[in-house]
Image 1: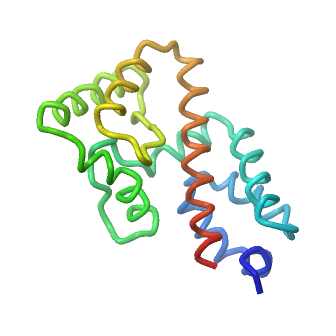
Image 2 (image 1 turned 45 degrees about the vertical axis):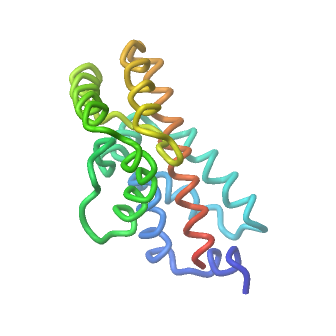
Length: 168
C-alpha cells in the first residue's frame, strides 16, 4: 500500500492528530479529511494548499499559537516541536550572539506591532536572513503582513504534510 492509500484509509481521528501537528488550525485538517480519498500525493498537497489559502484570520492565529518564537527552541517531545527544531536548525547553528540578541529584539518589536509571533518559513535560512526578513516585514501594514504570515504558515504546513506522507 502506498502512502496515499494509507492516508486515505487512516481513521479520521488519527489523521486529524497528524494534520494538527502540521498546522494547528482544525479547519485546515477537517477540509483535507473531508476530501478523501485522494488519487495521489499531488492531490493531497493541492487540497492542503487550497485549504490553507481559505483559512480565516482566526484560523491563522490558531496556527500561530503552536509556533515558538524564531530563535527559541521548541519544547516538548511532540511531532510538531521536533519539526520546529528541525526547521530552525540551520538558523540556530549560524548565529552569533549579536545576531541572536538582535533577533530577540526584532521578535519583541514585531509582536508589539502585530500582536502575534513573527513567523517565517525558516528551513534552510540563516539567522541573519531571518533577522533581515523580520526587519523588513515590521514595516508592512497590517493587511500586507497578514497575507505574508498566512503564506508562511501555508508553506510550513505543506512541508510538514510532506513529512507525514513520507512517514506513512
